[in-house]
Length: 331
Image (cartoon, rainbow, N blue to C red; front, top):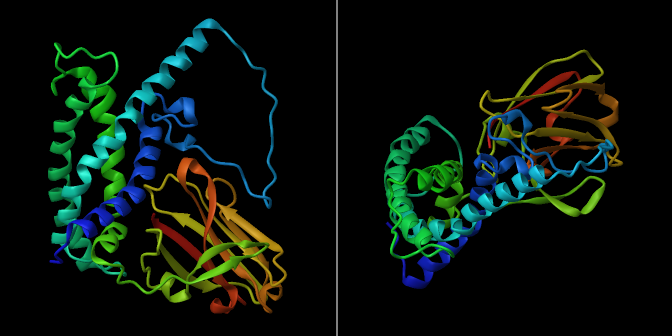
């Protein structure tokens, strides 16, 4: 197990906080009782917030008549305040969890770049230990943080058995925090142990030269290696009619967040775009990508914003007469 000096450990804790806090805040936004004021409703997972579409996809605006009533305004302000009360104590809670989290990550050892059965078995043994460490820390720090909030009176201590504490604070924070930590374990392990994966390669996005995307290979997808943003995609190839190329997109049953695949030719012209909330299948003439072109993999990032993440040159696939199915298994 690596031995950290204090400065190195503080640096690792800061990097982990930079990775986790935005994700936890996003999870809180989606699970908290006030989430419908910010674009999502916890009881309707299919209505997750989707950000503005990029240039290739037209945006439709619908004129809606705005109504202002005293009751609606009061409800919105109350929900907004409730959300902000929870968000205000989120950072101290996460900060309290980071040092013991780093210690456990050190004891676990570095993760593999690939996904295989042995690695999954290790994670299944490690995750319960992690939950057993993180949850008590939340319960210990939350009462004290709430006690110090403006308007609280010291003569009335906040207790962990208080129903409001559990419904308004502990429940939403726990529900937002644990999935974020577990989903980012490979990245957190790389931060603590040093990134042992191959260095990232970048390539410009077609039509958007200043934007650099993570370059991936056919081998990454055929062997379902975990990609740098935590995603796992399986690529399968089946025959298609000669002279045509087919693109299909599928997701794991538990997947909720939007995904998309864009195909461009050598002049950066878009040939097709398939996505999980519209058409998931497209067919085009193979000649359009014989001299070049790219496949760009998109996903919904923070607050549901549609974001291009990975780029794969079409030439790596020998696309003529093939159907490529991209199965987004994990993100």
